[in-house]
Amino acid sequence: MLTGTGVALITPFTSAGEVDYASLERTVNNLINGRVDFLVVLGTTGESATLTDEEKQQIVQCVAVATRGRVPLVLGAGGNDTAALVRSLQTIDTSAFSALLSVAPYYNRPSQQGLYAHFAALAQASPLPILLYNIPSRTGVNLEAETTLRLARDFGNIVGIKESSGSMSQLMQLLAHRPDDFSVLCGDDALGVPAVLMGAQGLISVMANIFPKDTAEMIRLALKGRTHRALELHYRYLDFMALLCKEGNPVGIKTAMGLAALCDETVRLPLVRGSESLRSEMAAFLKR
Image (cartoon, rainbow, N blue to C red; front, side):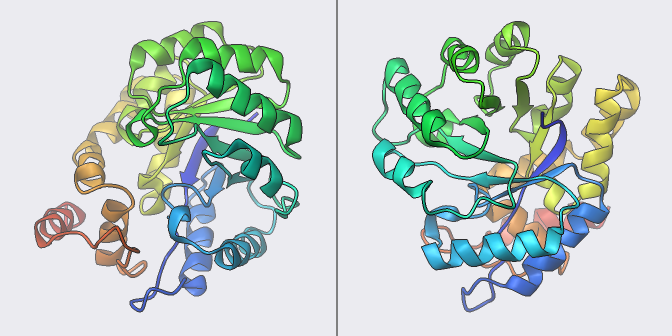
């Protein structure tokens, strides 16, 4: 059961747009030294949509070698063609991973029954336990609490959800009725502490790429019920969390990490670098 602070890992690029494996290795070590609990590889923050299959394989290998088994790894594996996704699971090397994170099918906007059937097919084919990923702002469809709970009851290898609907009502429905061994993980930094204080098992964070120690401590305190101290950290970073979203993810986090000299700010089209306005606001926060 995954708990605590997971990191939605960036994919650093050089200024020429190539994957920067040296920066990736440094980032992994920095996160582990910051005491995060697990890493999510090849998710939205990792710009998986614009990586080649060869790059994905090399990133998986790089992260696995750099991690050296020190924390669990979760592999992003989603799509809106169910049959193609199931086929891809037969070719992916999952030996270093503890679970898959699979986003709800995007663009074609299936019904709740379609979402159930998609994840049922994935559960029957997956070599690893599955974390569902609900993010309607990107996919155009909401994986409703009732559908999630039905999947959790029907398939023992569907072990949790990254819940990024932004609906605290939906989050509470999941928390109230989830099986005991089903993890509900918040997918929004700004809602992480409130979600954990309501009973969520943790946070999958973007902010932790640059502030791993404080993000992990914030969630650790919330899980221990040390509300006052957890909220102190939460409010210290609240403005930064908003900046991360101002021009989209991962543009925000790469802008911040570039300013902190942790990696280059380069993203791949159709994403573009952060504006000078965003860079100025980020720089002001980092100087606090």
